[in-house]
Length: 424
Image (cartoon, rainbow, N blue to C red; front, side, top):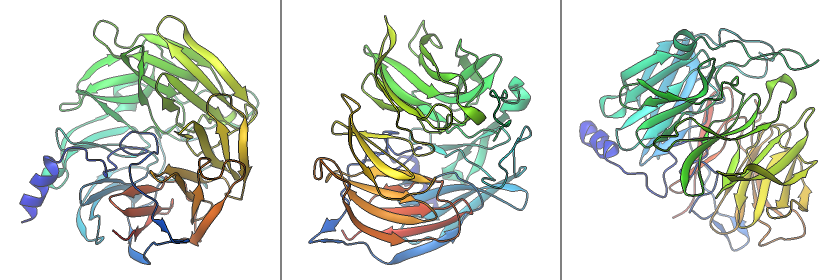
């Protein structure tokens, strides 16, 4: 029976309710699922199950009835497969790994263990992980996580320590960026002299191409696919700024746009948010800004607006003509103009958002608070918090919240993960 279930998972296409990637199916924090706010209350169950999956700020991914979580424990990086509905531990696979990357500089009290979220490929049944110390590994979920291929980005490409920025203290958190499956490639922000972005054959690990831009890696959540004038491209907010590269035949790795944007501590953390041929980028510290760029093949990146608003960790969510994020408070701006619609509440540094299909926002923030808010389509002039629930009280909620097939998954950086069901 176990083999049959794994075969079903292997052939499972990326369904609407799955969460196979960083920030979900569309890599944008937007889901085609309801919030389950009904008759004036948030109809969530009590805690369905709780598990420990190892230290780290990596977010879980969910495919069908399998949840995969990547963490660190006792000198090992551990990939854990749980039953998504019951929390049953189905298998674990581990590899020796340091708690921090080899070039680690500063803030060791704020993070440890993997920060990169696994990437599941439904075509091959492979799940790809990237450790802080550069171990890029593809595992076969049909064979309980057996390694199909592996390589180390530091060893293979001589990626240097990140440069020190201005007068800020030197920071290097290792590899934090989540890999991206695009067509037959696994695209990774390597930040090496041979290229910032590299594409590997997702089945074999062989390098296929590298971006012409060779900027250092940022501390961001990962590259994002986007179409520019009908051409498949990839955007990433790396150490040097916003980079958009082509991936089409004859032009792979060519730079479409490179917008300078260097942040103190090398902390371009929030993932670039893509909508059609637009990118919204943000960071705090010396930059403390958010900007929307329209990207074209002929003109590169045109600034549409640039406002003194910022998100530090939370990746912006673009939905229904608005941009949302959470850092110290929750904020909403008009996508077209950048005008602030509303802001308020208290979230702390940690925060992530999911936009549901009933015009609501699920917020995971602070040290483990889960909240439900109205989007601007329901509350255009003010922040409206519908419900709140404290899930944890022990550590920062750096990992982004996940909603998949009617189940919410909340994780903190110590490796505690909780499942809360929605009634269906």
